[in-house]
Image 1 (cartoon, rainbow, N blue to C red):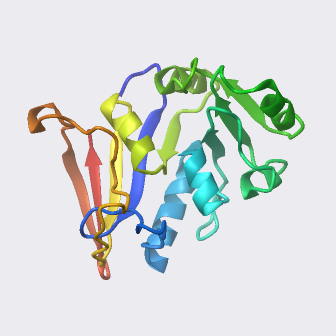
Image 2 (tube, rainbow, N blue to C red):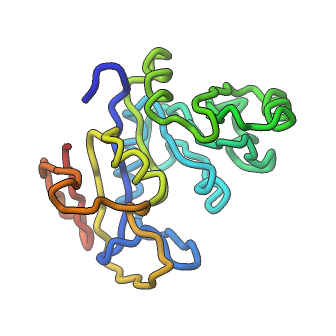
Length: 217
């Protein structure tokens, strides 16, 4: 881990064939027991980070509900600042610390609309969000650990830039299939196995009909 940025833990539940959602965006893979596990994990980190597409599709709260503990800061990567004011994130930002990260291309009208809410706006990057710079900014704001709960595209953004330190993946008892179903990591992918991310298995937990794999990078 680089000392100039927070520790990043990628967390996800996947089907046996590596999908995190069906072609119709259904991502309800986790069992009740697994929800308790990852909500306990949420309570241990300083922040949760997702992309705007996750907010649009799932409209999540990103809070700790199935376990006891504090709510982490919610960080939404939203390059253009287009998050809906009707989203649960915006509706609850008065009660839960929330950061919206935009790029310099975000229209002023969007920034003005966001500015009406009790949340923090961080600008990082020109036409798209500069994730490496963002992590340095967050480190200076005393955010030392981040739980990455993004989709396949965001996961690739962090993995191929070497910005992930741990992966905690629950293998669920489903086979989803479908070329349009999202996998754990999307993007361009590595061209060779030799260039891909090297992982070290730290722990395996059998959770009834699921397996939780904990890797370090």
